[in-house]
Length: 113
Image 1 (cartoon, helix red, strand yellow):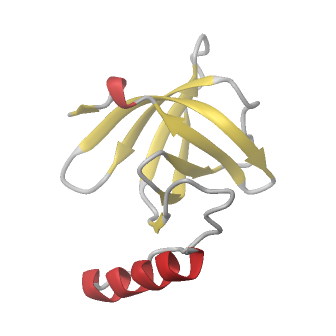
Image 2 (cartoon, helix red, strand yellow; image 1 turned 60 degrees about the vertical axis):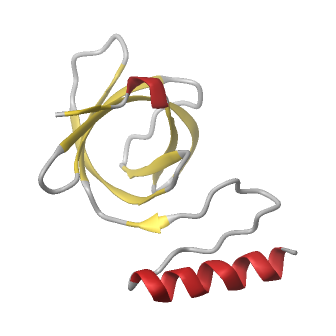
């Protein structure tokens, strides 16, 4: 089944004219779309804003590139520049690594500015 889903996503990628990162479905719930959007973020309860870029996004979240990833479970306030609009949302840090952090977007908090 995993091979069939990966093949389907590769076909969709060609149809959409941009690559989709096909991940192991045993570990990931959503497929990733590579994108380098500018983000301004800060941790809840702090006033220090950080400007970074995204590595990829999916239906469930965003990976933010940063040298100072926050701890898993921390709540972030994020402004993401996606071209003609700014998307504002809250997110919870799901994991961190040397390249940055993966965050889960709280879909009820999403606002288009």
